[in-house]
Image (cartoon, rainbow, N blue to C red; front, side, top):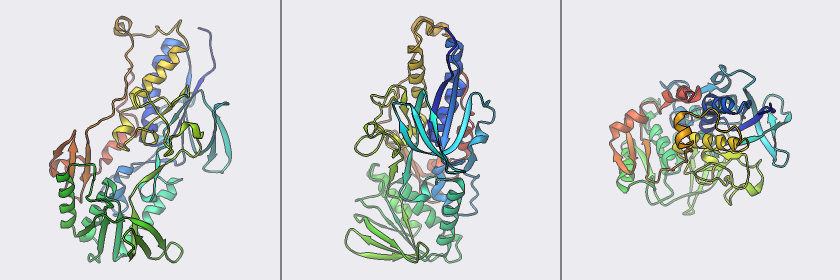
Length: 411
């Protein structure tokens, strides 16, 4: 095989999905391809923020300024410092446009606002989603994320009335953290209300799980209101005052703090419209992670058309996507694609892993500091297990192994 130009892989998105895939490609897939094909590769990871943010812990971080949790941020450049520059580049920038014919991604640099073009041979879209409230997702910069969280911590400390909208896991966990903080605030007699927007909390869970979550919130003096949604909000005094919230039953409430935990929007405005479904998510094959009708383009995590937004949809598709990328590379060089095979692969052929999304509900929802509710494969789990698995630390201790790729080994 004659020497060819370095193949450029661009991963747009510095969250769990993008960082996990970068490590997998750099430590497993690319070394095997280089051994077999003699082809060189370079991975470029692009993220608006200089730091990875463990958003799983957001409900506790936004409530408590002096949390006993480890720091939920890691500098992305530190996570790849072992990788030589010839193989990896990190660019702190925001994707603004994409030319699919020229295979160029336009990005705006964070430090200078300059727009540059990043060429790619293979592209992975892992840009994730942005929550309606900036509290639950990473802001454009690390400094902005910390500023938003710090301001909310101060406002919650001084507030007398707090309204949380959203009866899903994020809303329940946030309300639970607020209720648990009563013992630490100088003015514990705060009014805390959670609007579920449905007939029950956690509507996708077992009814008994939903009922238990509500009972646990009530013990934390959180008022739960069902069947009412927020239709509009206005914050007074240029974003520094109280909120006037209009509800679907035509009533209004004035509260000191309003937290929107109702949903998110995919970060796909820079992509061609034909790559997106009617909701703005990337049209992705749910097994191979290839973007439909777009050779050399893949998608991963909460930006895909099939995702349910779970942590599993960010982590578990990484090996299948890497296998799809490997197969696409090998298909370009059929005359040498058998090189580098193990004896098992030589006899039985290369195995291509396909992503099988979990169909039964698996989720752990912390409700306060001492436990929570959960289901594993559709089976309810005890509060003590939820405490150990999530409520105790919000799994921040797992962040380092993911961000630094410590669980990834070269095959």
